Image 1: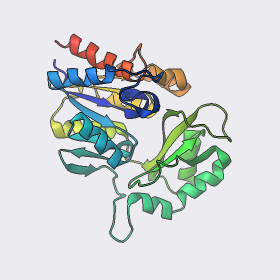
Image 2: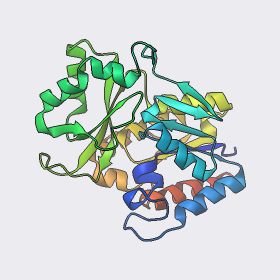
Image 3: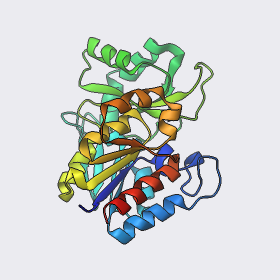
Image 4: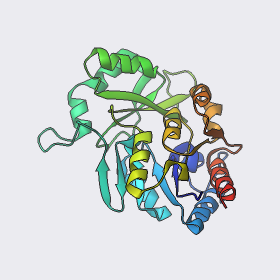
Length: 272
């Protein structure tokens, strides 16, 4: 059984400190990520970024790695050799209604969430600008509570998801903050990975994925094996709790790019 594709998160996974490709978690120069990407290239394995970032950022990262596919805005869409495939369900960009982002904003949903959670939730500035299909926040809130609130207000065509622990502090929050996305209910990284694999003709068992968050971990349902880099469960109790639900999930010894290297190389060795 050969390896066909590696799906990887960016921040906290492929990238090291400060979102750098050539730094490890401590900020020391590292070639681990580059060596893993080289190993994939030599073996003919596609690498697909699955990120919460907006499309121009993910496109540039994929271009630098020489990859023709990438997943962006937490699974709202993916690019496939120059074509963009939207996965936002009934919520679609419209000439008169605007982008999905604008439609959600016009309904007053971000304002409702800010008011409900007080100072515990805010836009993840400046990265919330320029988004087309989703809203990006930071803070420390209960995801189930947020989704229950959406349901109570008749906005259950949307969902609020946790995209993992981040390093940006907030004066109004104690401890580790998280990045959160507000997306159409049909959207997930797992769904985007499955859709991309179908488009490429990849069998799930011929794919692996690497990530650091609860949302990333859901991708385990769409691949043969999922690797959680060590910093994920170290920083987020939610990841530690969620691991028990997936018998195909493995925690790497290495963190961030070192964990990515470990996941890729160990899989290639196993499948020789």
